[in-house]
Figure (cartoon, rainbow, N blue to C red):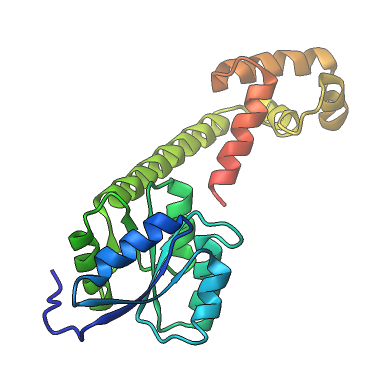
Length: 228
């Protein structure tokens, strides 16, 4: 663990939280520790950017869900305009897509509102010392996102493997079928009779384990999307 005993005191923090009572309570609790100074508070992202024009801070502690301008958009703009200021997302919960978006926007950490004030303070000090930090719940969410991504990748690989196992005629029909074409349209495109196309479609459904041509098209679209 990073040694924070040599960090300069107090750490200057700008707190952004849209709930007034929670904002005041958190500012009071964090500010009661001599290692942290809450130099300003904001109710939304636009106010954060305005306050940074007049206050010099080390860290911005951003609520993810805020009106007018949310935490992710604020982090994006803040990171461009004030690259030396560390952005820490602070929320009551994590959604995988919000976690990813926040990190992509320039956030260096993700803390949760169920953490005791002492843990939040220690987290801020570690972040200021150079660590990229996720709370336990955020770490669990990130790992779950990675697991889900791995499962999706495996599903896509299995799908492409099944498609590769189709014979030449089936493959020709498959490539047109997944566009949503009817049997007649497929027949015109690949120069087979409708009867032959009908047989190939049945074989394709069986080979790919699908119950309908719509399911084939949807699975193909999902698999393709995951490789981009």
